[in-house]
Length: 488
Image 1 (cartoon, rainbow, N blue to C red):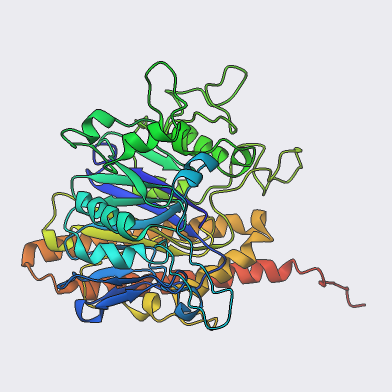
Image 2: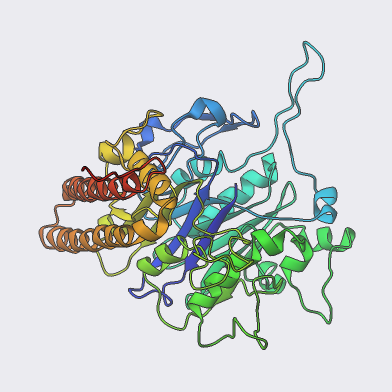
């Protein structure tokens, strides 16, 4: 599924937290946010798309998820969540590969019967499945890599994917290689990672992966896999996984690399040259780094801004008044068909029971607001969880979709109200977090997370309804069938 990922190490963030964030860019998938209790976790899991069956361990942890509302269509697609051990997961960033890799280790696709009476041959696992199969069973980010690695090696996958895990101290990024191989890297604390639908890692320490395993993990036969299939394209002893396992296509220069360029440009405006005749990187560069030490510490607001962007301040912005000849030529990060975007934030310096905060928004990120909630609870408010396939202003998902669909057509007229709305939800959301962090820390009564989440959602509903009314009025006044005639 086309998505965009940002990872923020604890020394790169403003408050010492780790953050993993991703837009889940499906095809207008109707999403909700729920809590899955251990009693509701299945004992045996069956994939809708690939028909793979997986027996699950006992004693799962409670976790949050953002599943599709219409599960019968293509399955759960849980997308993202934080479990009771304060481990976050987002899955997946669809990435690219190349024919050499896919021929050597083919993707494991479900084979449909060709004749009547024949049974299908189950395929591997994929984005539909990963969160449900992994997140309830891990207590650290590193354990997330190891659990998913075991599943990949046993069942395989039918697609190429990137997956992120975080806990209080670490972030791990994992990429699949062909049908059964994989590699993972601990994200350095001081960096931010940007990943736009391409094989991302541009460096990897094989010596560590086959030795101490401190910050690098991979398939046990990865060296032989590279050697036996002549995959190594690197020169002078260097090892760049992106060159070995990734792609270099003309379409990347329209769909993928421009997003990395814009994010890098925002994060390091002083330490790298992004524009002009002597630019180090352009929107179509193949060697934009996978990670950067940001020029200043990064906030949740920065993450939301980056995952909402449409090349503002460049000739590529689709909302420019004048056509520069380059308007809209690159795929925006804030795209129309996003189902959900989340930031899994694991904090330090607060009690364990409230260490995790999940920031959530639905619909096109350019127009929606980011709402924080405490995931360590037995139930989430109906404003997030009570979504159906029927359009309704009684939930965050459909209200957000309506605002985006209306405001897009009159962007210059609506953008000020959108910005005010987004700032208001963020400001009041942060204020309520501060209030309830203090209350729960001082009292030790962590059942107050339910009260806090209800207040957060009530606030979001009030401000979202107000913004929807303003946008509707603005767009109504500019309808093409409008006509005014002075009375004589």
